[in-house]
Structures are given as C-alpha cells and as structure tokens.
Image (cartoon, rainbow, N blue to C red; front, top):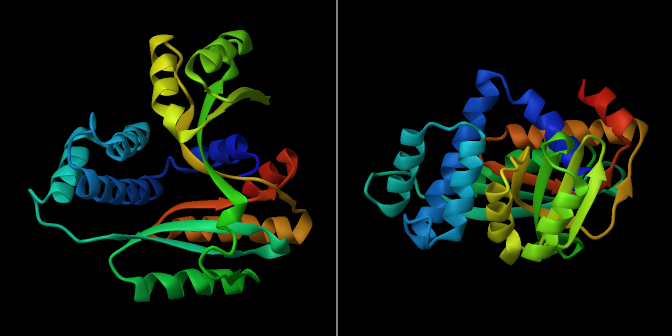
Length: 249
C-alpha cells in the first residue's frame, strides 16, 4: 500500500504483545499449510512455501511449529482444509482495498469482513472491482544504517530489481515477483539484513486521506487484520507520515 514501509514499521512495533504474536503465527501457519498442499513440502522447489517460511521466520515462529504446518499441508498430519479467498471493496474516502484470506468457512468469513466495512462506512465490491488497481511486487525494506544507497542500487541493478528509494530512515527496494528470490539472496550474500521483506500488492494510484477518513481507515485496516482468517490487507490510501504516527499512537 502507499507508505508501505512506514505502515509496516508501525505494525511491527505493535506486534510485540503475545496476543498479536499468536495471531500472526496462526495466519502464517495457514499460509505454510496452503503452500505445502499446493506445491509440496520442499521449499527449494516450491517458491510459495519458501516465501511463507521466510515470513514465519521473520516473525520468530519456532522451527517445530513451521515443520508441523508443512506436514499438515502435505498430509503427514491431519489438519483443517483452507481455501484462498480475496475480498475487494472500498473504505472511507473512496480508498480501495484487497483483503486476502485463508478460510475453512466462507459463510463465516464474508459476513465478518462485511460487518467491519459497514461500521467504517465502506462496502464490499464484486470480484475484480478493484484488483486492477494493484500489481504484485516484491518489496524489501532495508534500514539506512545497514547499507548505503550506492550499494543497494548496485545490488538492484545486478539482480534486475526496478527501484531503490529512500523513505525516512529506510530504503525500499521493489522488484517483479520473478526477481524477488534473487534479490533476497544477493542481499544475504552482501550481509545486508532487511527490516521486512515479502510479496505485496502495490497500488497504481493512491487516494490521500486526512482527518476523520484517515482515522476510520486506520481502524478499518487494524480490525480486518485482527480477524484470524485474514492473511493480508492492501489499500491505496495515502496518509502523511506525521498524521499516521499520531493515529497509530
């Protein structure tokens, strides 16, 4: 979403409580299960699984929990069957959003999401109504103290990444999904540790929000992310950094 790195840092700071960590691990486990079921349990030959494992490790998920999720996905252990569902719509101020979910019960998940939206003055849209506004991209955020812009630019050029830009005290590298793994490996070889990394849905245009609309949108995103079935929420809203900090506080 717009202001990705800033919003990601706010969420990361909020995720330290045990309750939030538990919910994050639950969502990440579902992602591993689905990836392993679709492409097998070997992350070397299953990129989706590798990305899911990387995301779990970034949240300090224990190794045995990761392995158990993989075995559930491959059928070695019994488990719930999840399906991927994408909900689309509009929130306060006309900002578009995509909500990716892994659910074992659509009749539970859709009403929960609709209720949260309606409380915030938003609404669900038909499939494809806003997805055209987003493109899947690899986004890697690196602390400015970890590497110089010249070094990151060199890595980006060598791997085929598209862009390196400064955002406050971090650099944000973006790339096509097919380049993402090579970019990760190049950063690792250069001993550059990212603050966050993952595949994201990036908007082609943004909608600036201020005042009440900004506050309602922040609350909407947080409430959606609190749902166990929800994996990721993407939006094209844009809020000034100082106002975002104030609202997040």
